[in-house]
Amino acid sequence: MTNLLEVRDLSKRFSSGGGPFRRARSMQAVNGVSFDLPRGRVIGVVGESGCGKSTLARLILRLIEPSSGTVQFNGADLLAKTASQMRALRADMQMVFQDPYSAIDPRYTVARAVAEPFGIQGRTPKGSMADEVAGLLDMVGLDPGLAGSFPHQISGGQKQRVGIARALALRPALLVLDEPTASLDVSVQAQIISLLQQLRDDLDLTYLFISHDLSLVKYFCDEILVMYLGRVVEALPDTSAPARHPYTRTLMDSTFEPDPKLRRTITPLEGEVPSPFNLPPGCAFADRCPQATTLCRTQTPTLDPRGGHPVACHHPI
Amino acid sequence: MLQVRDLGVAFGAVQPLAGVSFGIDKGETLGIVGESGSGKSLTAMSVMGLLPLIGGRITDGSMQFDGQDLTRLAEKDYRKLRGGRIGLITQNPMTSLDPLQKIGPQVDAVAVLHLGMTGAQARARTVEILGTLRIPEPALICDRYPHQMSGGMKQRIVIAMALAADPDLLIADEPTTALDVTVQAQIIRLLDDLVKQRNLALILITHDMSVVAQTCDKVVVMYAGRAIEQGPVGAIFDAPQHPYTQALIGCIPRGLADGDRIEGIPGTVPTVMNYPKGCPFHPRCDRAQPTCETVEPVLTPRGDGAVACHFPGAAP
Image (cartoon, rainbow over all chains, first blue to last red; front, side, top):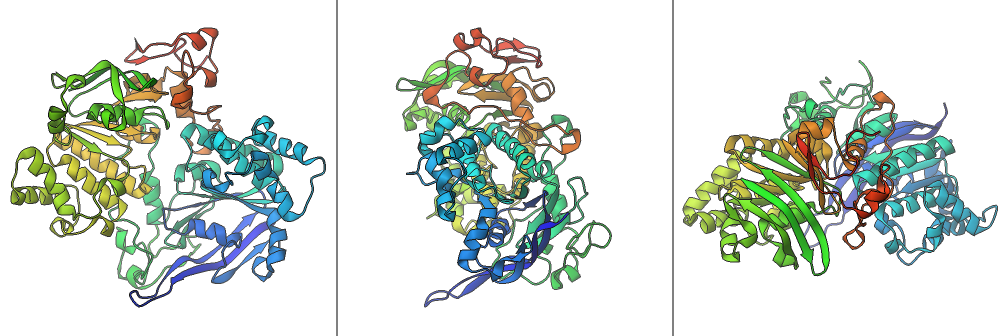
């Protein structure tokens, strides 16, 4: 299996400039993230708000510039590309955004939104544009008759299908899905997930799936990266692998089974994700971790594959 | 304790809610579950007597709370009830607190108003309640402003306000939707403990069937402003009778162990302007017959619960 995507030591630091009344601050949104995404696999990135998962998605597509690290896509070093080379490459790597309401220009018809990538890339479809758009809409389970509709005339689920059709217009190899179902009702979320599964089979797609919902990631993905405050703290090689990091364990314990017979006693983790500004040294999770020792408060653990799959913890479970 | 019968709500000529019935007793948690636009929050607002604020009115049914019919209650008396014997926890803790007022006075006001306490008595009570909600250093928190606190902490403050007047009934409208999963688990545990310790009746409004499975004793499933099924939580999950309930449970992603794929429910949730005639679910239902398009099924007792469907039971 060849790797479609190889990410090494990718980091992003955001800084806000100081002024007369405020100090300059900076935060490490993504910190030393490395992983391989083999062709045809689905990797899920899971974490709570502020853990850097959306920043990671944008870094990989180079929608924002990383502070350090490398991204290899199909063997090519993305960060060495010029803007115009990057634009050409993006035909092969597309993104589906969380909020279908703001991802589509409200003044565009569905057809224009779906056809837009062709114009940007200076390409023309094999047949007529109308046929191509109809084909794409059909592929995502939309009635081609909707081509003339405006975004406000269709539902949230339909809008997300338009977002997917547009992302697929140029037949990319990689789709980065940034919480594609977070703003949808459960019955519609299930439709979209089922559509994405079918498209993956039909079109040989590779997905990077960003989500806060561990049960959804477990259902949908082959491998899981768990992020906490900018770092990957655990890389689960398959969805049934037991948690080795106390944070992953907590995430798993915080998701409930849809079965009243499987009720659990919740032993909640106290505290919340700390502010990413001015993090204390050591493991970022140490303040909330029941197993934390002095070592955890002084030394930052790195991903270590010994004893099972990679985990960044001094005292793995 | 609260018995709602056949509740109907209208805004002008639009009828977003009809035929909603349920009951709840002390020490019980009732889940009201449904997708957006199903009328869950409207049901909560009806019980709280807040409909006039948004231009709605109750057209049918009754709501018996401890012997009095809430639909006939004067606004003056409702004020004593609201925030007093009935507490409300809203979805977004960011907007239910006054950003310009410190935490302490905001919570104190409830006990001053409803229990006639003095400021000092109320503050002592506030500190005590914040402590029982596992808020660290409650006395210091009273001097903070909402923006200095995290989302989970703000939601605890909102819960403290709902508890300050020692209510008998607590209505929680999507109390964890805006929160991260680990914080959601904290809040759910907290609500669970409150029901047991204070013998509260809790109405938990949510779209998340997993939360219902974890916490509720009884469930009402809503669709398009109708209660389409209700019953004990075990029966709802083990042997759901309504095709919508069955499909909703089928939409929850679980491990791939069984190899089944989730399918979703074809079509979309209807909005109040285009509620279908007959059974509101018939355009999305694979069991629909001509009757379903014309005759609206009523909630009829079946087993331990009740269901509004012409062809209830296990999928054929």
